[in-house]
Length: 178
Image (cartoon, rainbow, N blue to C red; front, side, top):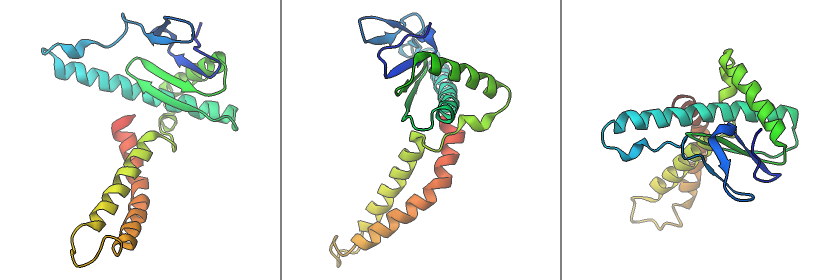
């Protein structure tokens, strides 16, 4: 049975959580990742945790693809951790569990395109970082002009950064976060 904390979100995989109080969830202490507190093996433990988050992130994306195909007008948000992922939206736990199970099978069968999602937070983070950096860079230097005079340059630099960020953010998503 997949635990549901309210009618708005469910957690997958179900083994990663247990109910502590009504409408609250918490990580299962036996399954939580706690190896980071030990100095010995820190790097190995960190890499294992990062790899677990990346795998869950890929499964979250694949699940989101399937849920979006089945429910095109439902707004969904997901968040991945080392112990699983959470989908927020107005779906039942059974719908999420069925989509996640199918997504896992399809990823294992080689449908790797499902692991990447156009509305991933990685895309937003990369785009925002590049646009902010470009705007800031455009306001530097040239003490003879006021910052207001440099505003058009900052806006143009930001727009160009957003355009350049599209392929870069997809590459970061593919090689770093999933």
